[in-house]
Length: 227
Image (spheres, rainbow, N blue to C red):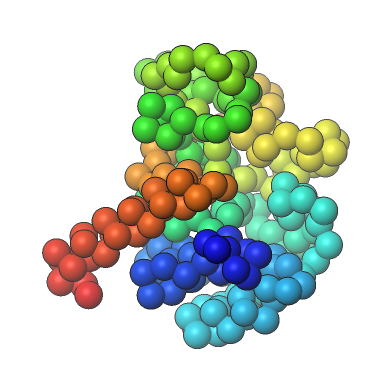
């Protein structure tokens, strides 16, 4: 019922589709060039949304098997750094601005989330970030274990294009946080921006959490007289 178009990016809430909220945050945060990889059945709706937003964008369907392989099939359009984000993940403009700033100081940027605020359902392996030491480590979290207070990293990512090669060599089996970790171990520069929004949603209760977040953004904009 929440996803009649079989596409999380096209779920409508707060007056527009989730991908519309995402585009707004990206544009207001300073992103100017876009590449959208859409499914065959969502290609036309996404093109219509992009056209309505009036942004400079490429919207195509390219066969990529999994979300993780999208940068591989689009690398001919990638600059040396690119922002990798799911189309159903609304981002506030202030957070996007922080990513952009961090990307001028580091090759890659990952997003950190509080495990207490946003526990990952069904996840047993995490990349953990220790803010004081600025160190990353891998952690095995058992499904029935008590949730510990830590920061884990995941998307959105600012990715250096060279990392596509690392991911390809491992057949894209892992998330990009793992490939960025490998790059960091090789001496690459990686920074972290703390999330001001929930992670991308997969389940109905996580969608509800995203809806509440969109509501909070609307209240903030109204208080500043923006809407």
